[in-house]
Amino acid sequence: MLSNHETQTKPAGGQSLLTDVLGAVPPAPTFKRLESVWIGKDNALLDAMFEFYAPSAKRVIDVCCNARRMWKGSTTGAKVTYYDRDPAMKPDVVAHWHDMPDADGTVDVLVYDPPHLPDAAASPQSLARYGKDYGLGRGVKADNVGELHAPFLAEAKRVLKHDGLIFAKIKDYVHNHKYQWNLELFNAAVREAGLMPCDLIIKRDPCGGNLKSGRWQRAHHAKNTHCFWVVVRNSKRCEPKAPTAPGPAWTRCATRWICLMSEVHN
Figure 1 (cartoon, rainbow, N blue to C red):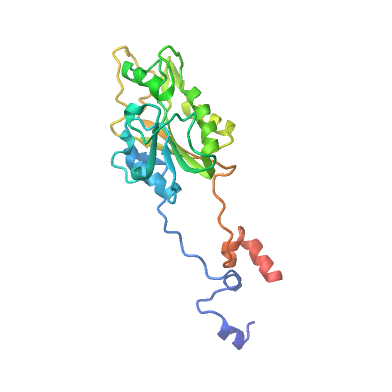
Figure 2 (cartoon, helix red, strand yellow; figure 1 turned 90 degrees about the vertical axis):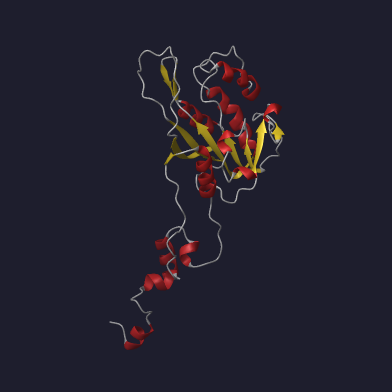
């Protein structure tokens, strides 16, 4: 039983030894958490992704900007440096994602939006651009665009800072009578490059999925109205290490009970 002295010196509200040792309990987080399914346009999603994953990013590059359509209306777009291999697109820097002019370990975020269809399935207008934008020729016959990922990811590994990020827009599709699992191809290439796929957002555009062809008489696959935004980190872990600064026990220790026992026995 506690003595009168002990009872009077105990903090009001019935706080326990745990509170005495660990200090004040931290306030509940107030951040706005991004949801895994997004219905809307890329511009608003990109703003939300930068706010959630990379709020302090300074060096941001879109490695294949084309006409910058997905950035229109974005508040983040103003701080992006735009790369494209085609000078007609008027990029900030004429460069290919295979060979970027940046020094090693200097970039915070890379935005990667490769073609969503192989050139064998693309329209004549798209085919005309593939050679300029991606170095693909009209004669290439492929079921998917998986060949694009590895060269980009090798260069991304070089230019990204440790814990730097890639925001990659990836899409599965049906071609040559088969479902093409482009997301699987991309994630395999990410791991092969020594990077870590860390998060996934499914984006559905209400205006998407309107591709039509007079050659299609029957449908054997569901109508594809979504794409993926994959978040990749240049690290062996998905969560950056928190800074180790002096403070209450609950901020210094990863496991509260270990800290508690250490404090009590010392």
